[in-house]
Image (cartoon, rainbow, N blue to C red):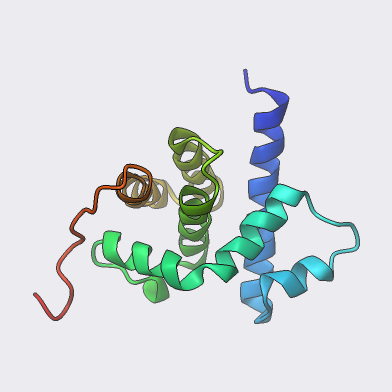
Amino acid sequence: MPTAGASTRRQARERALGLLYEAETKGQSPQAVVDAQPAPPDAFAVDVAVGVAANAGEIDGLIRRFSRGWTPERMPVLDRLVLQMGSYELLRRRDVPVPAVISEAVELAKRFSTDDSSRFVNGVLARIAEEVRDGRPRPGPPSDAES
């Protein structure tokens, strides 16, 4: 049975996904979307949503390296947002264990996208986690210039 903290974090991740999706569809920054909320969202949700935007270059670079055959620009929006959230947590929220980050991202993908998306999210985040949490560089797939 999940603890209250896990449930709260799960809800915060879902809220962060909603904030990021709203920012995407409105063409606004996540901070602008957060600021426009009638009630302030959970601090963890805000940290993730705003953190994704603040670290977008590094996050998208990792996703690009480890998502074989898919650039972030070609991914379905929800899959990309879930990957960005998970990548942010792996990079900047060292207080969250790797299995929790990956499991929660997979659950978001299952709930809001497809089963195929959940497997994709799992694979990409697992490869990113091996590099950013273990500190061992892993070769990504060959770049277009190398193939």
